[in-house]
Length: 472
Image (cartoon, rainbow, N blue to C red):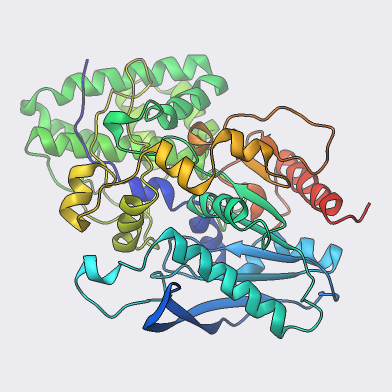
């Protein structure tokens, strides 16, 4: 058995939904200007002053009393353009408006001038993040004519889906309904205490086996062979050449990082397999990897295909394996690492024996030693998070008007909530799975090449919202 003590880029696995929308934010169709709202640094006290929080409003089709779609921004440094989400299309159909507020400490919404990370981020609490949204929505309702009695539907994806869930559960009087896309609600807490820590890569494993057992078995054999090669430091020159690495690994720890890069790409291929070229510019899909694998003659070609699909050789001349940066350039790691330690300690990097990929034991930002070192914080456990924020399975089943939306190609589904029992009550919360879809794919703007399953999922969600609003 080969265990790799490598620190995979947890932030790269989580800054996903916002990344997809941000990819489209560079489109020339994103024309709505952002504005700024004066927000308290600490909602429990006025002593710490205020900061300017970036926001955006789209309301060309708003009718008095129409719904407000509140899109929960997440952890990236680029404001996600509302025009590149599905919500303006929904708002046009039912006379609503779309609003969004940038997450504190990300992008232009910096709530502190301090340089010491412990001092800087002390107001980055889940309470303050939620009250940012509550206060902003109150402002919108009291300043836009006809919005005072509008019902608010909150949505967001990945970490934003987690926030969407806690907003609905903790402020039900503000948020009438919610659609959390790919919300990670399980596998919270440090690895050593977390029974669901393998579920993310168990889902990755499942994606490839479900597409082709023949290809999956070839992938497993190729990675087993690679792991054996990694046991011999005498092969590092050949490994660097075979994998087109930018620099030659010199130690066992270096080889661990190389394997981390490979497995990260393996899970990002299905997770980000959007149909839209804006959100998936390289067109990488798990089916493409399966097809290459089935025709491969040499096991190393399978490994290289895992890297090349997201790093095309004509654009990426060699594979960098020793960078300290996240593979998602828009992610701001410092504040995200803090909130991982403070209230969202998701564990997704462990790989169990029997997976296509080599067994992996890792330390993540949310492990107690790392959090203590960085921020003097001890991360909460799954039970503590569920109890404090009212997001246990029992709590969620009882809450009305939530659609938990997951996708077949998205490993986040492995660390989400399990399916709900069906109910004849159309206001009951529900769970849905979109076949062959990527991470929150139905939440991005319609595209002429959209998968039929994604088009159907959007219609299911909108029709459900119409029922919530009493339109039928």
